[in-house]
Image 1: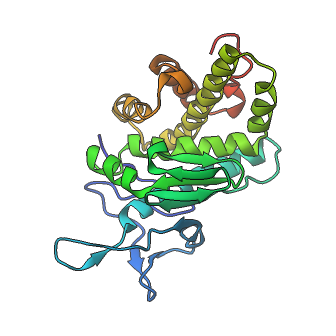
Image 2 (image 1 turned 90 degrees about the vertical axis):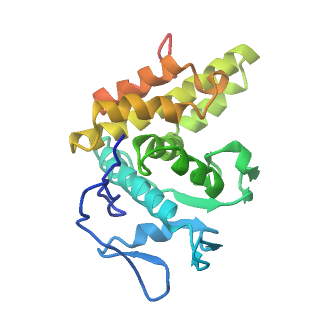
Length: 262
């Protein structure tokens, strides 16, 4: 599976065997900086990624490689959803913050640990990514920067899109009047919509010839293996809704809460 090159608000993800068109440099403060004017996004990836750990040479190395990848992926989603919100006649897309943490983190949705995996809190509109989890994913997949890694990040951003569009509020309102079986089904529908929105993002990545069929066939199942069928839907359901978003590129086609059978 090849790496992705994502050009967007946050710059470029390097591709194996390809020379970057934009340099990633270090500024005088020691933090990672872009060689283009789009530096503002990187600053929105906040948290404890400035903590350092010794590398094999005895010097210190930050979590910058993971942070850079996250920044570029989320920056690309911003480009896509900025344009889609405008096209749909909505207010400007409210860009989320991304918090990279280690161990546990206090959120507006309560104390969260690395055990929950990637997490979106609708109360503070932040995506939380555990650096340990990211490191495992980055070492598991070959090469780093593969589509499955991007999928995990974009899926949480898709929950932010649901929140920004008011779908989260609609979902929570309907939950109170449902029986347990119906609530579980509703949770699955909500999760499947995030898969569909992830597909919508991938639609525009694919239009730039950055995704191959092999990327999708290998990457999607690997990414979706992180969730469970009880709350996220079956593998067949998740792949179907992702590919529906991928094919249509239209958020309006992702209304999993309204269809008779998701």
